[in-house]
Length: 106
Image (cartoon, rainbow, N blue to C red; front, side, top):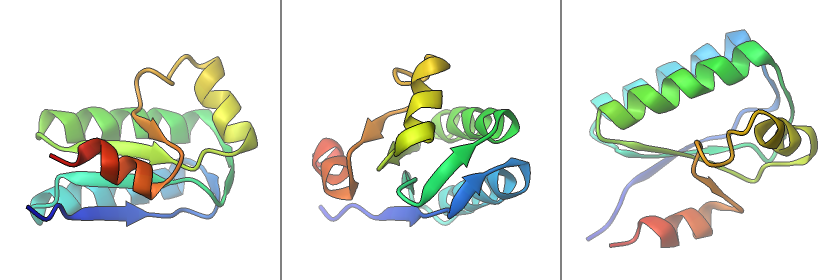
């Protein structure tokens, strides 16, 4: 069975305004029937508290609707903030897309 994965790659920062864009993307993907969502943070160097809060809310919304939202390619400050906020067990996190694909393969 072929699994469809949708990937969103924000650039530079995750702040309130683009975190809302991520949330809209995730919910639109679910509406379109895609339940496997990957947020590739390779090009993100900063995330603020409002952006992080919206990501948590988005993750919970996706999970309630039967989907999976995972993070990949965390770098520097973003990786540190996830750890400091003790969210590394909350968000499924993968080194890259192939690792995510292997994890969800059935």
